[in-house]
Image (cartoon, rainbow, N blue to C red; front, side, top):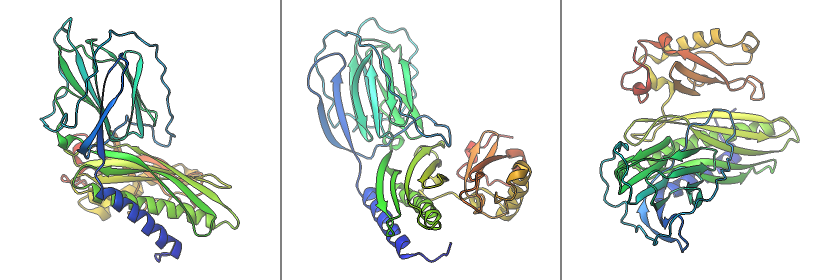
Length: 400
């Protein structure tokens, strides 16, 4: 593909860049809900806090996100008065502490639970068998129950869920369940603002000027921290690259039309207090031949910029030669002709650190090859002495 943009590519770049820029400039409001589970009444809402973010458990790569529906039997609770936590509920931030209450629960007193949905399109909350609330991304709900160890269910639109008792706690108590893009975190003190940010799923629609390719993309948009705009620009670049590949693959076949859809997974560790996060973009091209495209987007959370494979090594040229040699040994003989394993950064741009080594999803010369996206893992032992000790992923590499 030529380095020069076609008019359609230039138009697409402008559409997506403007879209992400507008979102990055506007803080995401956090809506605070308040209700006491088991009591009839109206629900109060207030707005005013900005910049909180979302989470979900790790989902297997290359698997579509399933939506799980959890049905639980209703449990009667004693009638309690309604309460509302206003917009100042999260204003005074304190240092967080992972819940560690181990004492025997008091026989009386209320437990207050605040749930923050900072990543899911929606999060269904159930307490003691009652489906109590559905929070969209960027919303927070505060609830009180008289049960010292209530049964909690959280079911998300992307299939992430958890179910079971929480506690017991010394009562009265207030706990915070924060659903971040990198997983669920429980606090026994109000979490600090530096622990909270949103990565919300956002829809992007469009169509190619030829009328043969349209898209309905589910893309991640970050907010609530200084590097969010830079991170969104990094994501935008990867989205545009995959969308251009998808479009070109369709237009190369005369008369072919397609609808391009996408989902994403937040695969890596990372908070605002650590340096690295990984997102995987997964595109499906519904054409005469179904095509799946993937791209790992590794981000340095300190500045929002992308982390390339060359950023990980003290001598990138030597490292790429080693990766080429190691992956050639690991791929099936039948795939050698299709998979690109030469020592170039582009061939090894899809990477993710695992406990046993650096995993790659290899490219092919033909996007429609059945070997496209083949996964191989180069063991850490083969890369010993080459990795930069100040790279964003250094803390995630096993010692030794």
